[in-house]
Length: 573
Image 1 (cartoon, one colour):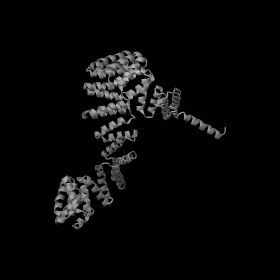
Image 2: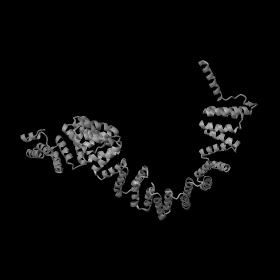
Image 3: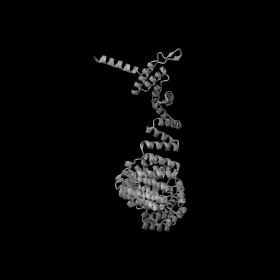
Image 4: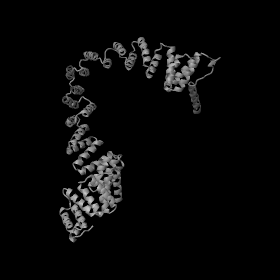
């Protein structure tokens, strides 16, 4: 056969196959009535099944619907249509068709089962129960039907009926754990502790080594105030299964309910060390315990729990985190640093470990390590402003000013909180001034004060830098005065205020404030005395001015013009 003929042959075959899924409507009606044609009904029904097997939902629907036109009371076509309507998302149409099918053939098991599924899905539980009562009577050996009926009685909270059906189920399949646990759950809903205990005792007769049953029985005894009986059950657990993974958890709950928190905590530690208990359960009971632990005991208990985790799981970070937090809280920064370094060796992506190791190193004044770790943390958390902050401050400490500015500018962009932004702006203002970028410095300070108008440090620095530049001196006086109002005994701020007044020509008030600065400074450096001498010189008290310049030279920390002032006995600005 040639290729072209083969293609034509295949085309006819496909057209023939497709025609099976196209309904023919000739001869449906006669004189306004429906013509019953079983042959055509059977043909379209068969075509519908073929479409169904090919998963052609719409083709199947068309054929089954047409089959019904030739035989309107065809329950089989209704049954099949109900399935296809579900596949097409027409659930209500599907429900109506299966209802009609059951009306026509009420004894058909499969029709009834599909109707039952609709009753369940539509939460028509009373109708479901009536239907399945009849089905389970007719098919008493069908365990699935019985189980579904029990499920619905439980949903409807019809516990007495559920218990009757559970008894029937037990006769069919024999006693087993699932059936007993269903009974126990029902007795619990009914508040019938005696029957719960009796059922558990029956379970223990069948399986006397089952530690879980003893634990369940112990819990019921505890709930009924029978502590001695409960303890006997827990002793049985240890006797029959000393490696039971949950015995420590059960005893923790037991002692906690008795109010003996010391023994309860001992069981927590034993649970952590219990190698048969899964790790997630240990974490859950740890979290549970410390959410309610009082502060008086929490720290020491956390240390013990952390140590237990480290000894049981030396390659897991959790124990080192717990111990690291303990030592950080106790301000034992060397220990906390070592522990968080261990955490990072196990998990280099742990955010809190990076944060806490930097906190520890900051308090240890290990500036080199702070810079190293903050830069390293940025590889994992390039959008976290805290690491840019420490990288910027660390760089500034090592006189890497350009790097410091770069880190702080970038970190500021990631600050979602305006107050946090002010910390960056404040530091950036100082660094900008240091590099001679005064306009950027003043702009940064303005941003801070727009959010924090009472930021004394920025008020002081801003005022001082304006006075050195000799610009906006009234604004400088106002800011310096504000800073003093916030911290009236701060020697640094008093010195700035005095100097700004001096620069603004208010020498008498400047003298008064400079004396306060020296009086409030514990160890005033040379610049304080030099400033005082300059102010006194302007007031005309040259002798006293020279005396203060001499004090400045002895104290150290004076300006590069002091030597010339002393040599010539005059003021150089």
